[in-house]
Structure formats: structure tokens, C-alpha cells
Image 1 (cartoon, rainbow, N blue to C red):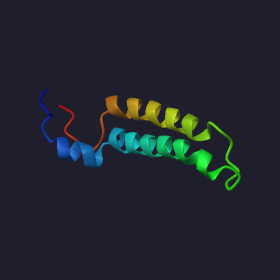
Image 2: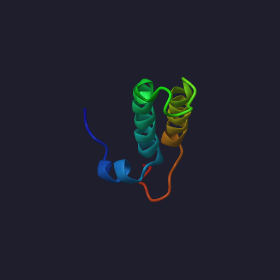
Image 3: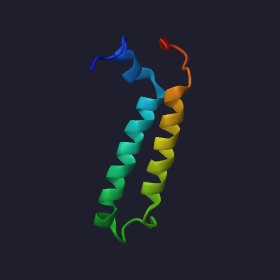
Length: 72
């Protein structure tokens, strides 16, 4: 396995990386939701659905050329 040139910049600037981090956060919130049962009026599955949408957006963002990144 070989990392791409400028991988640090990609991790910092690419929307796909940012969206994947958000998806991980949403997945973690879905796991914690039973601990907050009755405290927050959040329907079950909402964080899972948001995580799915975020991962789909990250997939799209990964293949779209992004400004300020080397896309070669």
C-alpha cells in the first residue's frame, strides 16, 4: 500500500474526509442514544439515517474534483 502524494492536505481539506468524520460521529451518537432514552425526544434510527446520507455524500465528494487539492 502506498499513500497518495499530499495525503495530509487531502485529510485536512477534502470534503469526503470531513463527511466520513461526521458519519462516524453520527454512528457514535446512534450507539449512545439508548443511554439518553427519555431525555431527548429523538426517534430511533434518525442518527443511522443521517449517517447513511452522510456516507453517500462522502462517496460523491470523493469522486468530484475539489478546489485547492491536487486531483492528478
